[in-house]
Image (cartoon, rainbow, N blue to C red; front, side, top):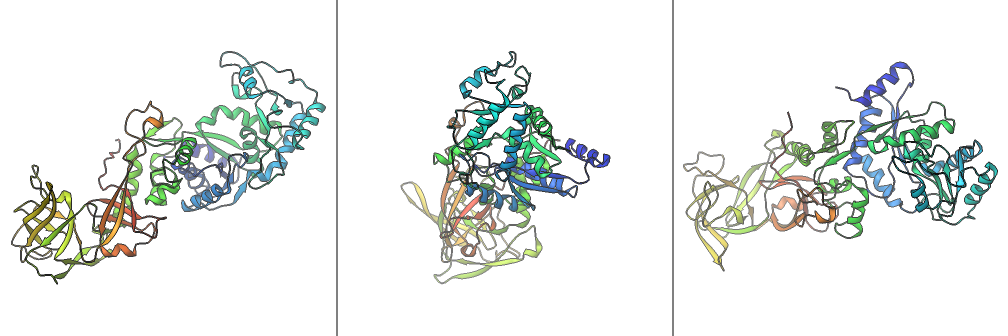
Length: 540
């Protein structure tokens, strides 16, 4: 079933209004892209350009030299390519000359004027939703005077904030965005691409439509907060006399439960040191999700499933998790890792006991084959897999109880050691003739994972949760921070993990899906991508 944007595009192609489709993804390089941007990228690129045989430009909206950085430019390029985007890269700053010419044209047409209004005065004079705005004394300034002052602004003769250029539209418009908005301001700051060439910079609402028109964009897809700005978008293109102007179309932005989608607040988390940078695996940024183990195909699948709508709504957090879990279930190699190690000694084997055991690499993929693990006299099991006083329906190890070691034997617990009431070691005996794959004379209701003490590797397992606590949606983000968003375990893993490559995915049996960390390559650090259990239930 098509969405409303596809209906518009197909109508435009059918009528001959456009022979080909050109879209754009226009990030501002003042931070890393987050999962909300992924929805826009997938729509702009896969949902329109690729689907209709057109193209999608990556255009940096670098019109604010104070907040932008080349570091974010490089990050964004890397991220969109990771998602699968392919196309041409443009920079709004390359159009500054053309934008300046358009501003001069508006002044000459009597459609713009230089004003000395301050931000405080601007707010006061703008009016309200029920009261019209008030004109300033400079609204009817002579055209030649505005041209001269605008030249002075361009020449660096005017201090920051002393003068602005305003569009001359309608101070009584019911749409406040049309009440003579500022379209140029003075900023004496070095631009990351243009250097000190410019000291006047266009405002977004003026620059955005011009960028689209210059590039020949046919459909400018924006989120719903820009719907009230569309009349200004159309006004700029009309008064600057562009033929075949682009059409702005708005769609609902992405909101996810317990997820911060404000770039401003994400920046605050980074600046305040609450997270370890923009690519912290707890962050909903695409570099963060990538480092956590999310794949581009899982992100694209998520964007496909949530679809495109005209009304804002909030998506359940489990939807994104389900997409990556389903993929990793099919592709991730199974290994054993013990996150809370408890030593188990096999009492009926001698010190040099070392028996090979076969374990499947992925039961969902027959071609993945098997691997050999060694069972020695001493192994590690999870502390939670042994209980002195087990709860009802407990099918793991207890004194006198039996359990199967994954891929190996059934063992019976014979004794344990305690220090200060805490179990520090468990003793067990192998029940003969019970090795996996044979006809065991004894049955065990439970199966537990383990690692061999003699050849296992020390790993650091990082267990991630949402940055925000559940509930209290009305509270400020700072009051909802989850103190358990990161739990670090000093764990033991199979020896094969020492050869894991950065971002290589594994299912730690009974624990979740993990990948080796992209940054801490000098140590064996594994990030939990997602838990095994899928709590998300699609609505019928």
